Amino acid sequence: MTSDKGQRGGRRRNEQGRERNRTGARQFSAAAPAQRTRRADPARLVAFEVLRAVAEDDAYANLVLPSSIRKHRLQKQDAGFATELAYGALRGQGTYDAILTRCVDRPLDQLDPAILDALRIGTHQLLAMRVPPHAALDQTVGLARAVIGAGPSSLINAVLRKVSVRSLAEWTAELTGGLSDATRISSLTHSHPEWIVRALRQGLVTHGRSADEIDSLLAADNAAPIVNLVALPGIGSLDEAFATGAKPGTLAPESALFASGDVGRLEGIRTGTTRVQDAGSQLVARALALVEVDGGGSGGQTWLDMCAGPGGKAALLAAIAAQQGNVLVANEPAAHRAQLVRQALRPVDPAAWSVRVGDGQDIAEDYPDGFDRVLVDAPCTGLGALRRRPESRWRRQPSDLALLGPLQRSLLQAALDTVKPGGVVAYVTCSPHPAETTAVVQDCLRGRDDFRLLDAGAALDKASLDGGLAAGNGSTAQLWPHVHGTDAMFLALIHRQR
Picture 1 (tube, helix red, strand yellow):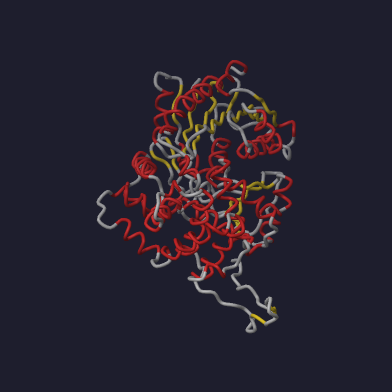
Picture 2: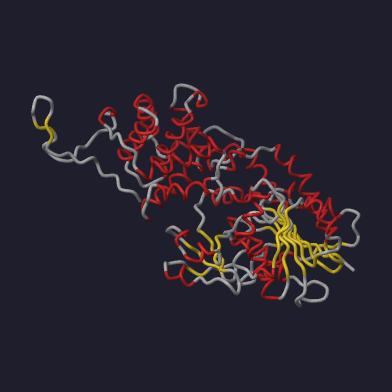
């Protein structure tokens, strides 16, 4: 973690020529804001910049954070501190705002957004990190003085002093005391919007698990995920990652767990032969590549990634296709994202892939009965990836389900129309919500007697290292953060009968 040393005093003289600070480093109390440091600690400044970009620019923290770390030239220890501070403040925002409401003399929406972000950063340090209270106060006020102004720093100091009088457990007990609504209690305890708590509980039941697992699931969402790497089959290597302390992945072949440090410094990451990819995403792609289709697994097949941007699953599928003598078409409707797909596919033999820029909903017009395997990684709410994208829990709204549902159904219908007889369609979402998973599949298969569901759980087991994921629920499969340590990926495998 970043150091919290006090400012060092030297022999200095005031205007009258008298020496000051004879005793060296000064120690300030929490009650003396005027004497606090006036500089922004670089690690805390990085976290503040991330929160500001998320709030002002609708940015994703995982995209902003690495560039900010490099801009401020943070070393490994300080980069880890900044990462925990930024992600922790974003994850805990709901609970922290409830606490701050008790400590601020006005509604939070009347505060300058930058002040509120500084308060969230200070609150996370005080309640959830091993930072001494005096350091959390001093450094947060110093940050505010440097980047917001001297006036707000007094308010921030006063509010954080109130926050510091209780532990997180004590604050949580106060916030939930007297409540009988289990959803409200879980929301405050685990910092998730109430509608998401209800949605995830419903998802657990729909996919064959107990609703009593909700607190374990929410807690897993709040745990910092380990970076998962995958070496593109036949192309990449994990030797460099292992040499820097990475451990072999336990779920997916040719994967690694990268616990700390800047993964962007790995040569394989820079060249694209090794990629950062959640194990759940790796497994659903491998499951599609391994499942048997009519005619067997011989070469000469044509595969489709219908929603390929930004290219993670497409790169893995293309590498596997190249090994087997098959070809992948990566479809992406947005031109700028299609360029990201091309960049992701660049390490793979160019004879094994092509990129189509166009609407996936119309692809059957160009490729009727054109593909042996089709991946529909449909746009969704992303409720299954809240541990990696904590800001999403505060951005998403229940209305998003109604907006995304028609698109998900249209894409899956198009996939069913473009897969060859004997071929397989994989419908994938990074969400366990029934409205985005089983309901979509059921609606699209209604009246389509030429299709049947395959055992997706068995396909995931076959794709995994130990073969014991136990993610199946009937014909479909659902991975979970609190059970499998992956994003909550849903998979349905749909076979078109001849």
